[in-house]
Image (cartoon, rainbow, N blue to C red; front, side, top):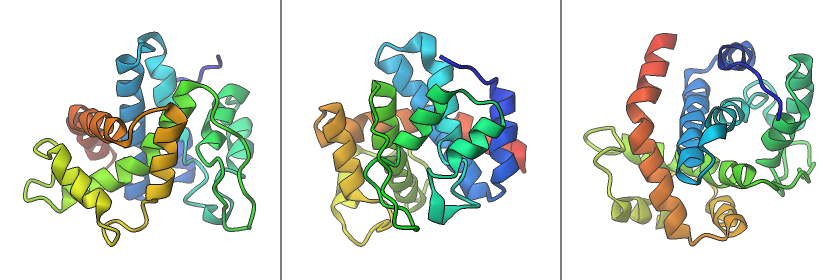
Length: 200
């Protein structure tokens, strides 16, 4: 298992990402991945799970048409190990990118399957949180999230098909994925906000 220090991973993220929204998403997925690692019995690897979450969209801002295709090059250039690169690319599995290429690196490890499933869902949960008077996940209930999830017009850019496929790859009911990811975001929200505030 290769290792890149978190400070170096943050610098690498910011080298290719300037949009505060993308940086916030990276911090969100990092925090959610660490929460899942602890919850699923991989506590010793929580930092590693977090680094994969932090870097998963490294190429998206500059190369949206080649998302997950440019990432290996950017990460290798920075000396990031092949295991992290595999995990980063696998979150695009079965998804066709702008240049008409379908990503064929399959999520194998449970960590990769969690990344695939939770990545898209965190976007939907944040969008739902922003609709609330509190602008927070902390007072959001599962039934409210499920209602938003079922509403096709809400956060239409967040693919329900990808989220469902993520749950299936994990062998989980959709409700388990929704429940756990919402819990992860509630637990991490203050930390994510603090990280984002530091960047301003």
